[in-house]
Amino acid sequence: MNILILQASPRANGNTAWMAEEYKNAAEAAGHKVTLVNVSKKKIAGCLACEYCHGKGNGACIQKDDMQELYPLMAEAEVLVLAAPIYYFTLNAQIQAPIQRLYCVNKPAKVKKMALLMSSYSPGVYTGAISEYKDICGYWGVEDSGIVTAKIDEQKTEATKQKIQELVKNL
Image 1 (cartoon, rainbow, N blue to C red):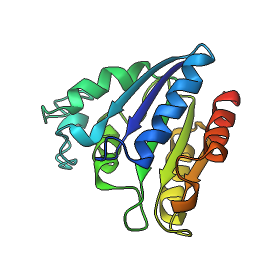
Image 2: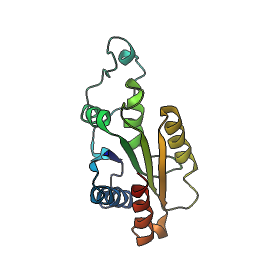
Image 3: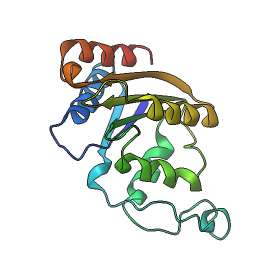
């Protein structure tokens, strides 16, 4: 399968980046094609709600920023993995911009499955992010292939690595 991982942590060696890399390694070992993009290093503006994309743009966003690099990757992805830290009860801003900019295409055409990887220093802070993720899966009509969370004492552990590997096995 063609897998796209959007990793949204600005910390290059942080916990979320580690989770995304572990997913990538497991998926590649299983024979999947994987592209991992650190969207926190991209310049992606939020949706302007200008409706250009649904009129003159014929599905193309009027904004020309780093999101232009992601549209072709998303068009070919069969699995979309969102990897984001939870800073304050929801997916961080760095992942929200690319998610919201998908408004112009409504749904990546080939995506059939999604997964969610999240890290936080606190337990019990994932409900809002999980709700948003599940709403996206439902709206797009794609399969939720799983969620892995890692609070402070679960980060970069063998147990978390195994949970991530299980997600890949379920593809």
